Structures are given as structure tokens and as C-alpha cells.
Length: 541
Ligand SMILES: [Zn+2]
Image 1 (cartoon, rainbow, N blue to C red):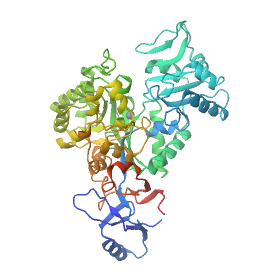
Image 2 (image 1 turned 90 degrees about the vertical axis):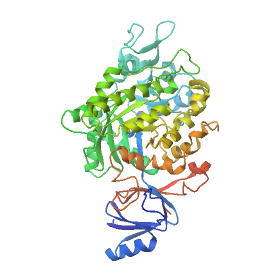
Image 3 (image 1 turned 60 degrees about the horizontal axis):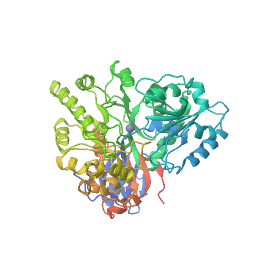
Image 4 (image 1 turned 135 degrees about the horizontal axis):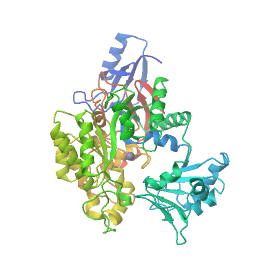
């Protein structure tokens, strides 16, 4: 491995205002030290040391490494040990039953089978799983499957038995153990306190299991050109301190192939905050990020807090998670202390509540510039976008919804009018607001190129264009996956563009997303990913 490398004969999308038409760059250790033409870069490198490594990009396009600004890598790491019950992997309940039965062949008799990603609205059977389905697949093992929304779970008879749940079990507060006409549990558990009755009996993952999962997950991210992430809610599924420790161990062993900005649920963040640490503390590989909070649920299960009732459920408008007064004081506490908050808000009513809290906190401490984020932010109005701009809040839009749920948003959840301005990227762009895009993996697959494609085209699974006026140019979608999320972690001077002095994080693409027919952006593949000057994924010919 040489300290000095040059990459030449490429098309470099620098995203820098001062460097255009570059075809080459040089890296010294983990940073770019020069960017320009092939001859300029070769001359510079030769002048420094003739013994440099030279990589021919063969005319291919280079972009800054993608920064995935809201996803759950550590959650995905442990899901790699589980059964994938998503519709990407299975079309029917029968197929899921086979996958569960296969899993039982490789584990001990009393070991739990866990699964994730089940979506009752997408599966061909169009219903929830039951304990009978799971008993069929695994009669001797306890089974626990989580719904894609994380608000439902399914347990088999063995799991219910271990949890001591039967027809006499009282309903937990704010949640439901679903029961049939005879009062017997069906295996469906609704909301967290019902799920908790079962999942608290599942043994925690070991540190080695988590670390191996993180290594595998990071490799998967690297294959998609990703060099940095914001891990979206560490501690949400428990084991938060263990996950942070695993990240720390991997960093010190030089085994972390991705830079991690750790967003944490408040309970975990407090351990750091109450002991003197703030947002931004750490190295350029592992950093303390923001406090994560939730102010509503998901549009696709009718729990996002919306102003107008849901299209097919006029009786529902969703609920705010945190009462306004408590939200105000929570946001004020962290804002005034100089910490960043990343708050989940999908519906327009939840966004309103969050903006009110940010507004009050900002009035009390106007000098704090914390670059707070609204995660998902799907139903923001123009007026709310304008307020975000004034408060320097970054909306982090979940544009993949247009593809994955867009058709059902039109017919079931929101109706055509609200769907057409879901994830209003162009409104944000026109207002001059910086914004990010994300996958929320494991909710949708990790693939920045595909998310960029969706932001540019807004085409649903059924091929409908939903809200053409909210499409944005490819360059803006690219910024939402590079320089804008770098801004969110206060690192716009460290990464997010290809410029001398910045970390040498970049991806080599098969085609240029700024020149290809926009409808074909999703066909672009990642050929190589480089983190701090070293390949972490390489399929260059
Ligand atoms: Zn998330």
C-alpha cells in the first residue's frame, strides 16, 4: 500500500465550486492533495516521489463517497443473523415459512428464530402472520418476527409460552396482544409494550456477533459507494452501549470500512451528554452525532400525524408521540447545550409540532447553530419549508416512498393530491434549503443511486409519475447524498466533495449520472469505493 496514489483518465464530479473539468486527482495517505488534469496531477506526483501508485479510471465517472444520512446499519448488522421476511426476499407467506424452516436446521433446539421486514400490505396473502403459520414452520423453536414498521411483531406458540402469554394475560397499556373469538392469542403483537413482553426473553447478541454483523453490513454499504453513514437510532432495539463499544473496538482495530456518525436514542445519548460529551465528539471515523426522537409513526400504517384524515380511513389522523410541552423542553435542553437533534416526523401535523418546539428553543438560544434534522419530513408544506430555512433545519427526505409506497399512498393512505407533493424536494430546493435523502435501511434497500434516480424521476412501482413538479436535477440529488449530509455532521470542510485537503472518500461509477438519460440513472453501477485513499470495494477491470 503506497501513501501516494494518482487516479487519472476519469470524469471527476468534484461538487466543488472552484474545480471543474477535472480528470484526475492525487491522494496522499487518507486525503486528496491535488485535483485537476491528467498531466498536472502526473507532474505533481512525479515531483514528490516517482514511486507512486497509478490507477487508470478508463474514462469512468468519480463522485464523492456517498453519505447515507439516515439508516440503521447496526440494526441491519444483527438482522443479517435473522430470517429476511421482507417482500424483496419473499412473495408469499409460504415462502417465508420455508425460510424459517430452513433457519431451524442450522441452530440448536431451543434457540430463537428471529425475522424482520414482514409487510402485510405487500405480501401476496395481504394479511398478518399468525402463530399457526409460525408453528407450521418451526414447531420446536421459539419464533419472533418483526413487521417492517417496527410497530407489529408475530410470535409462535413456543415464544408465547416462554413469555407466559395466554388467554388470561391482561392487555398492556397502549398496546394489544391480539386475541381471537375464543380469547386465545393469535400471535400478533401490536405496539412496543406488547412486543416487549416477548422480545425481552430473546437473548442479547454477543459482541462478536454484532461486530461480525457490522463488518458484513459495512461491506454491503461499500458495494453501493457509501463511505459514511449516520446510524439512525442506536439503542432503539436495546444493546445500545454494546453497539457503541463494538464500533469503538472495530475502529481501534482498523476494521471499520465506513465512517459512522452515531445518532442515539435519548436514553443512550444521555450517558455521553450527562458526562460531558456533545455532538461532534470523536474522530473522523467514529463520532457522537445527534439525539434521536420520534414525533409520529409511519404513513403506511396510518400512524403519521396528519392534518387531514387518511384517504381510506377518514376516522384516522395519527397521533403525536411526545406531548408538546415535553417536546419543547427536550428540544430546548439539547439545543441550548449545543447538541443536535434528529427528530422523526412524517406527517404535516408532526412537522408542525417539531417546528414549534425548534422555534421556541431558537428564540431562547439564537446563537446556537446546531443544524437540527427532521427525519423523513415527507409532508412538509411550503410554509413549513420556509420556517426550516430560517431556523437552519435540514429536512432529510424519505423519497424512496415515491417508488415503494407511492401507488398505495395514492389509493389508500393519502390520496392523489397529497401524494403528488410527498417529499417536496423541489420546493425545498427553490427555497434555498439544504436537504438530504436516505434509505432508512432496513425499511428500504440501501442504494443511493436508486434513491437519486427516484428523486430525479419520481416514478412509482406501477410506473406512475407522482408529482412531476417535485422532481429535481441529478446534481441536486447527488448533493443530497454527499455534501449536504456532510454539512449535517458539521464536516463539510472534511468530506462531501473532491477537493485538496479533504478526506479521500469517493466512488467510481459505470456512467455519469449528470449526463445519462435520467430514466436510466438506476442502471448505473458502482465499480469501486475508496475510503481515506484505500479501496474498500473494487471491481474495476
Ligand atoms: Zn429510521
